[in-house]
Amino acid sequence: MQPSHPAAARLDLIDALRGFAIVSIMLLHNIEHFDLYFSPQGLPAWLKALDGVAWDSAFFLFGGKSYAIFALLFGLTFHLQYHAREQRGEDFRPRFAWRMVLLLGFGLLNSMFYHGDILSIYAVLGLVLIPVARLPNRVTLALAGLLLLQPGAWLELAAALPQPAAKLPDPASWAYFGRANEYLAHGSAAQVWWGNLTNGKAGVLRWSWENGRLFQIPALFMLGMLAGRTGRFVESAANLRFWRRALGIAALLFVPLWLAKGQLSGWFAAEGLRRPLDVMLSSWSNLALMVILVSGFTLLYQGGAGSRVLGMLRPLGRMSLTSYVSQSVIGTSIYYGFGLGLYRYTDTLTCLAIGTGLALLQGRFSAWWLARHPQGPLEALWHRATWFTPLRSRAYR
Image (cartoon, rainbow, N blue to C red; front, side):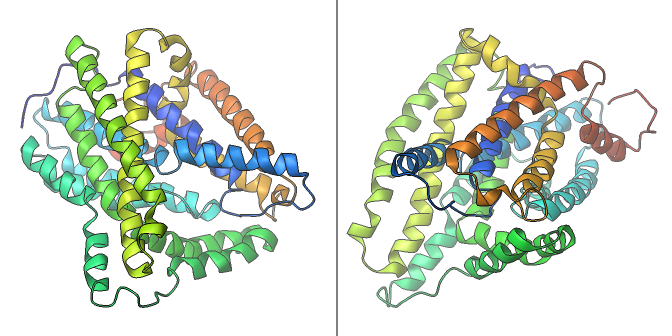
């Protein structure tokens, strides 16, 4: 393993970037009514057109990218914690395994409200970092690259080659999400919570497999860990050059990948070929655009031009666990049938306005809380449960 670049345990850039991911996730979840898809009737044609532009723009920019940024930073955070304990002569890996058990608990709590929760998936897949924590950089990069190639989709493509024109059944996740619509729209809070933990969670896991997320997420964890090892988010002239190159290469790759994805239906009539190819191209184009977003954000932040504005996202990033869980509780109470039921009345632009307002409120609350406490409420609970620190203790490791 190469020695880590000297850096503070907490980088302001990382907090701001994590805050950016939280805000973009908030906006997407709102326009989706937290997976309760419904279009209000009677909207004028001009508003439908604007809604379509807003929807397509939001998903183009953030769909499949926000969670990827979150995953990248998850791996980076693991490295910072691992390295800090390593310098004390301790092995962080057993503690990290316990930490993932705790994260699974937070994820299951969050899943009661929003079945699309990613915390529980991260908690399980995060265990992959334990065996790779001491592997050389080149080996870790090779493993991440293999996973990013989407081996599951390649196997599906190979299986389809003998009879590519055979009709495929609908993805298994569709049936689960179809059942979810009923209790999300009309069920009581208890029915929603139980349905999300059973039917909804099963559907999300199947959807994650069908769309290659179960390969991409651990790969991003590893890439984040490597970024931590090599100090890529530390401000330096060398790193600014690295991020400029990353931005340029990702932009060159994104354009043909995105265009190819849009042409798949014209190139391949056989669904058996088209479906796994779509998974590959979607995964790769989303990854390329994620790199563009991370590189651009980093260059703006470290270049000084945007650090003041982007720095306003730091409190949200420092309280990302609290922010992520609270947005699920608040958002589902706004849109689902057991709450205000606003899914029936809110179009995309209205949901964007609601999501923006909630993000601003979360940002203000996070800044207020952190001015009085060293960590967010759920972050403090997670930390204390990780290290078995008494509730009144102010000592942070």
